[in-house]
Length: 515
Image (cartoon, rainbow, N blue to C red; front, side, top):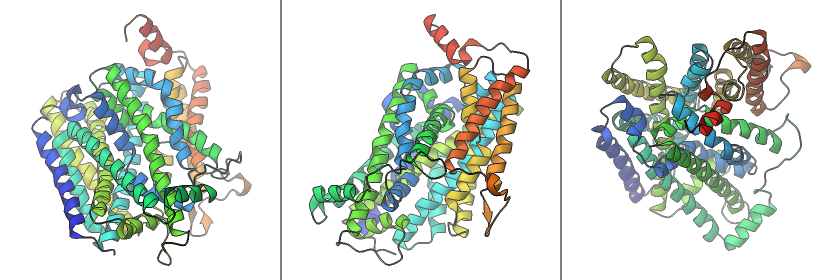
């Protein structure tokens, strides 16, 4: 436990009260499901763009990126650097395509292009992976706050859950986006404040700190070996390319933001703001980790014995920042969690209403959709807390490993489905279904041959065990769906595809000025 001044506590409380107030302020505007899930398409592009950025920068970034740079270097940033490289051209196609062919759910596109099964498979994958992600984010931020204050982690899990449920339940997407704007700026301010203290309140000054970080190879992206068995630069280049496509092409939390814009032009502008703003902030928190390493390993400040890299940033916040600054950074940490989790909850509710409730109750009216949406927000919040409490009961052991395995099992191949639908007019539902089946079988093999119970693998095939780094599993799963799905489609009769559902049709319609 570290001593937190009452001034810092007041700052955090004001931030929390303001967040709750936003939920109540926007509550009266949520008269329809369209307003609740899309903000009635009246929100300006810059606000949606900042909201996209704030959603991507969760408390995992706030805590895990400094820890990663402190322990190693900037190699994990390579994944983020691929986002603008991959998406600069594709945004011009992806954004108007989704705005034209779907009502609310990203996965409606998969049904229109292939089949109801493709939509259900993708929807369930999104739901399962985001529940695990939400629980992780909530647990990590609660653990950090508990470490700083000495208050039980369970208390923070329950309190933060209540705050996020109230904001999202009452205010809908409009409250989510505008609070993301405020929380995004708070997040950047907290990071810049920490950078300032590290650079200008250290022996030797800014020049010394930066030179030492470079000489200690803490600002580096290696190793650069062309190997897929270890975590290398090239593994993250490939993984990052697919991450960019998945996040901006298949993730409901991002696609739903496209739908909130007034028109295609604003939606594309918002997407670019989100893409271009994220990378500098990821780099900012990597730099914090590098400077922390210099700060505690250059003969000045000393860390308590036994402290891990995951705990260093939290310790720095509590011991080195001045009164008031601690409260601002803690508020930024909470903001990072809220801006990610409120978006997840609203989007999970949107998927639940659009892909499940509406399907099984086609005659439901808009009021019923709104009520069910709010009930699903509440259920998502309670489930999120349950996952976080489960992690707390396990003392956080293997949290990220569990998240990865759930992600690999349940979201395998989604980018492959998207690329197959977008770039191939020949691909059909039968071929896709075969591709998904092969992908699921491969994923099961890879998980079973790399996961240990105790000291033994669940399935040990010796030299035939999955040989590559776990980050490559997601890449292979997408490629399997894409390649197997494409060639398997030739075993079945070709089906006519609506023009607006492929990239080729998109350009045709654009020439005719129909899109």
